[in-house]
Figure 1 (cartoon, helix red, strand yellow):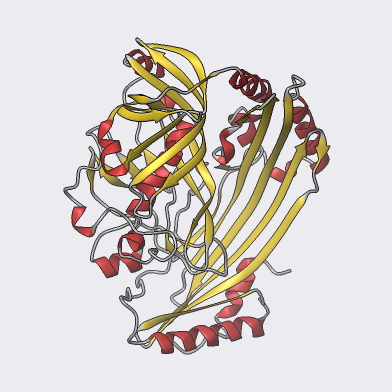
Figure 2: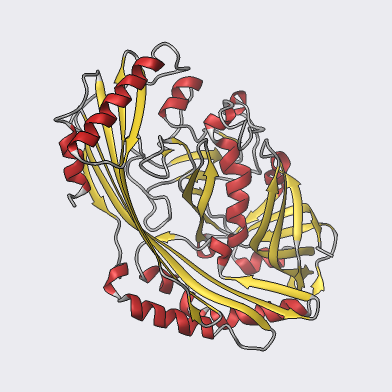
Length: 479
């Protein structure tokens, strides 16, 4: 099969007559390995290749996608996109003008110290068997598994103006779980519950401490069996990075998506409590809250140099010293709202047009060590690892559950509690942020399956964050 760059280059010969065009070719190859209760699961393999043609003509854009990457297939897609542009003419809400200027040439692959295929599948499975076996430390461990998913993602964007943008990266998503059961009580502890996701190769598993995590995961699952239930009341809440990331995702990331603010998602994923007039003045959080869009961080899940519309991606602060400054809005939404945004037009595959998405959305580090954060709490709780989440259609009122909690009394981290939950309102929760961990406490987290759009697009997102300490949060147990 031809390389995807060859596919892209062939389109120019069959492109339709139009003002300008762009072709995005994507190939996603994946492998999924896992061991459940000592048995190797069927290996999951995937190879998905196709193109999205974007045509600008008659003052409008048209799109067409195909998995037929022959010359005739590319020509048909081009004609279909041209036809849709004609149909859309005069009907679009806002159409950003095509980018003009010097052609862009970019060809890069994300680094991998230990490429995925440098180790045989048999050796990877053997190591997973050993990791899974290390979870079965007690007869009360009823279910246990370990696995890792890898995706090799490559895209090429070419345009009538001579642009050539090729980007390729590997995505590693490890998972590990132990469920302990005794009588009517069952408790589960996981390795990040999907939040441990990074670009790179097999070195990611070492960096995350995946291979050595099983004894701790099993011990904590067993510990939760006999732990007291989480208390109920208003108290200080210290969130570990593997819970902070989902809090960022749901109550900062989604509310700041500009297409959602403009109403595009209301029939499916909801709207946002954020309105266009808030930018530049709204107090989103306390003065220590600084939130960055940063697609340039090496190894974070959504690192890239150009978005899927070919816009150059650079770091930008969305919230500075607690004040809301900028939305997550790509070029089309920027045009509609007459606002500055970022390069966050992203598509989950070749058969979807790009829409406004999170990429790497991070909280900047504070100035406290973890010990200092704990020492500052008189009455509170520390929560780790998201297990459930619920948030209303405007991304405002929320409720989250975690796998494990620890009480904090008079500055001392104490007893483990089970079924810890908390609730709040986005518009006030971040204003109660009173401390953030320093650079030594920051962890890179993320999610592999953020859903949005009609038809749905499930996409990977990165979140780097320190632990965060919040005052006066409503906490409750699961009993």
